[in-house]
Length: 111
Image (cartoon, rainbow, N blue to C red; front, top):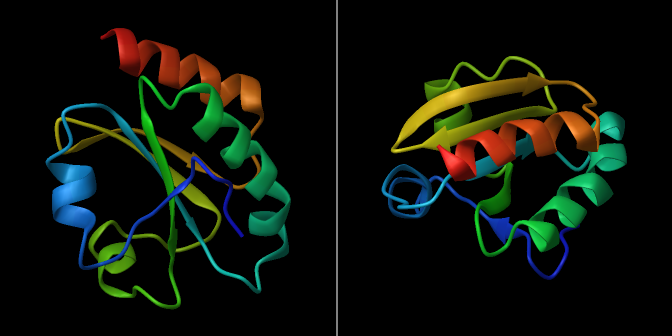
């Protein structure tokens, strides 16, 4: 359920791929059974392609990777966190417009 430029984050690679990343990282916490998550999927894939040279964009399946969502207090999905320098700098909950993601990503990529 991910596009060609959309990364897959796991409990095992989260530290190295997200927290230690030199570029901002957008992480979509989702699950296959979640209909709003599935609806948001194409938007995340579009953003991954459009921002592939500036920002890492990926998904974390909360069913297969329970540790990281608990650490970041993910209580509902979809929840999307934007990290820069290992810290959460923006949090989106629920269906979010592409325009809202773009505004946050443009700020993060240029900041």
